[in-house]
Amino acid sequence: MNKKSETLFVSDLHLDDSRPTITSLFLDFLQGSARQAEALYILGDLFEVWIGDDDSSTPNPEVISGLHQLTRSGTPVYLMHGNRDFLMGHEFSSSSGCTLISDPTIIDLYGTPTLLMHGDTLCTDDKDYIEFRAMVRNPDWKKEFLGKPLQERKDIAKRLRNESKTSTQNKSIETMDVNQKSVEQVLKEYRAQHMIHGHTHRPDTHKFILNTKPAQRIVLGDWYRNGSVLRCTQMECRLETLNPNTARP
Ligand code: MN
Image (tube, rainbow, N blue to C red; front, side, top):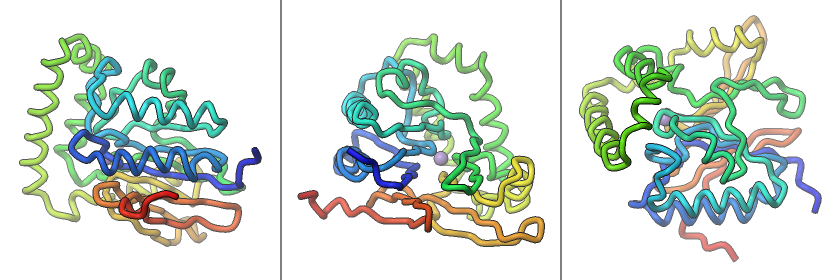
C-alpha cells in the first residue's frame, strides 16, 4: 500500500486509565489515518505519567500494542519524551516499535528544516520548573528512581504531581507559556525558521520575523476532551480536531 505524502504530529495525549474514551480515540487514530501517513511524530506526554517500562497498568499494554501494530504496518513512529513520560526507555521503544528521538530534533519536513520540541524547555520564565527538570533529568536521579519498587515509584510520582499542581496554581499564564526569546534562540542555534512543539496546550500557529525572514511556530493541542492532530503535506500544515463522539465507520 502506498503511503500518502502526509506527516502527522501529536503531543500531550496524557493517556491515563481515568479517560478510556481518549485512549480509544488514540487507538482508532493509530488504526485509521496514521496507517496512511508517511510518519507519525509524538512530541511528548503521550502518557499522563510513566514510572518505568515495567509498569503494565492500564492503558499501557494496549497503547504499546496499538503502536506496535502501526509500526509493523509500515508507518514509522518517532517518539519524544515529555515532562510526564521522560522515563520511557529502551524496553518501551522495542516493544512498541517506536524510535525515541531527542529534544530538540531537526527534521526535513518536505524541504523545510523544522525543529521539533516538547516545549517545556522553552518555558524559561518558570524558574522553579527549570530547576525541577534539571533534577529529574539527571541520569543519577533517574537510575535511583527506576531502582525503587514499582509501588514506591507510584507513590513518589503521585506526590510530585500534587506538588506540581499546587505550585502551578500560583503561577501566571505568562510564566507558564513559552518565552519568545528562548524560541528565537533555539531556532537560530539550529538555523531553522520553523518549529513544532506541544506542552502548553494552546494549539495555534504563530508567525513572526526571525533574521529578517518569516518564521513560524506551530503549537499542538492536548487530548483532554478531543484529539488534536497536525497534518503536514508538501503544501501546508493543518491543525485538526478529532471528536471522540464521531464513531469511526
Ligand atoms: Mn508537557
